[in-house]
Image (cartoon, rainbow, N blue to C red; front, top):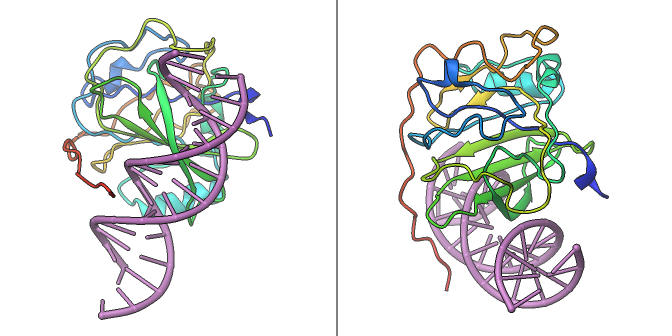
Length: 207
DNA sequence: CGGCTTTGACCGGTA
DNA sequence: CTACCGGTCAAAGCC
């Protein structure tokens, strides 16, 4: 089991509701999206699962649009051993097999000191990212270089971008084959409303 | 030596 | 009220 070698997918979501439309940059640009930290809790979801799965999601998220597997595949960026290198450094803090998902879900946290951003990643056996969900906003800019390892390359399977607030962006307008850069979503949802929901760390703690 | 990854268990929330 | 699921924390090991 060495999925580490498998190429991963990287979502290029931009994080900004308003800029999402034109801010989508190339998938392989680490410094492309430097910009400012996200504004609120945003959830980015990338799906590469079979249509069936996507269908399910669609049903689950009526307001959300789903991309076809082909489209998702169009957006593929490989990042060395990083599950999804989006310019930030992440530390895995948990993994679980959730119901409804055929693959285990991994939980990542931004390694920055004050960055509350978390990320959920579902990887298929093939090592492809089945789903990526970003939560929160970064309080810092992206590091110039990867913290560790040479994670360069970009890999990302564009699927659907979903904000935790319920907003969903489509990276590529179903342009699976057309999208040379698949990552750029033609347009973000009409109105992206991001509501910062969790900013406060719940003091959940077990003694 | 430091940081990250992995696995199991626990807690909270929701149905 | 109980059960189930998701999410997070903590400890150990490895790189």
